[in-house]
Figure 1 (cartoon, rainbow, N blue to C red):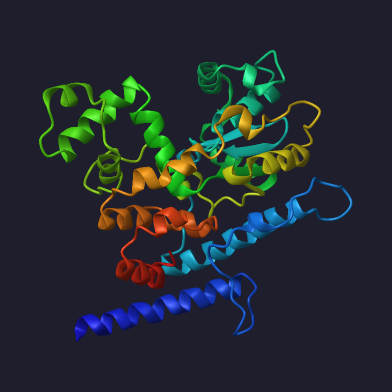
Figure 2 (cartoon, rainbow, N blue to C red):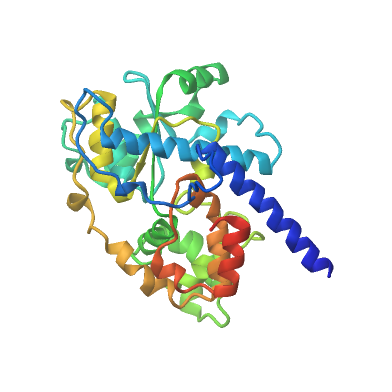
Length: 350
């Protein structure tokens, strides 16, 4: 009886949260609904015309409004957000010449976006991002580009208030899989030694000596258990850390929210927005990735994952889903336990 009463209280609380999110998003009619996870990519996509609000600008405005509405709801769930320590901004790249801040997120075209900032900085002798080797990008980035955590508190505040702010995101489960494939299946010796051995030793029932010594054959399920294990220190690596914790979107008012799923259109808009179309061109997605490869691999990798673990993973990233208006991919949604799924959708908005 007590359990049923507690569940009713939870349902009432979530109903209030949904009402608040609808109202914050502009839904003022009882029959008008603003879904949390609709794809705004369905809007027409045209180039900037410089005269009226383009359909791309409409997309970006919609993303900002939905993010702000979600932040309002999350703020009601918790205590007031305390001011962030300057160190929290270590992922935000600063260009003082163009007065722009960019929060980079690994596995969301961040290497190419860093290339853009290196070109603007004048640290390379090319205007073609793809001519800069990946290794050089990361070395030059550390040596020549500043991040917001390098500045004093007053300087940080000024830049946050006056500079243009950019973030690019990606469907969370797809990014997670991309990180796993890149770091644990493509001969990344550093990750094998630092994370692979630890993961295998902790989550494999009977690992052989070679696996423990090399850490080279981490299974996807083991990786997921690791990143959802709250008792393990150090599982918050930037390649799989949540967008909310990397870029603090409820603290930082981003002007441009780009998405990997529409990277070509979004970067075209970005270059116009920054006024740098004559200085640099962003490569098309087909030039630097096998378009849709990771998306097509989702069902292959996630289908063998125990349903309770899958739910834990989704809960780890549920705020990213809500903040950036993502839908759980159909291939993953179909794998979920119906009873758990319906309850989770009711209680958590996923």
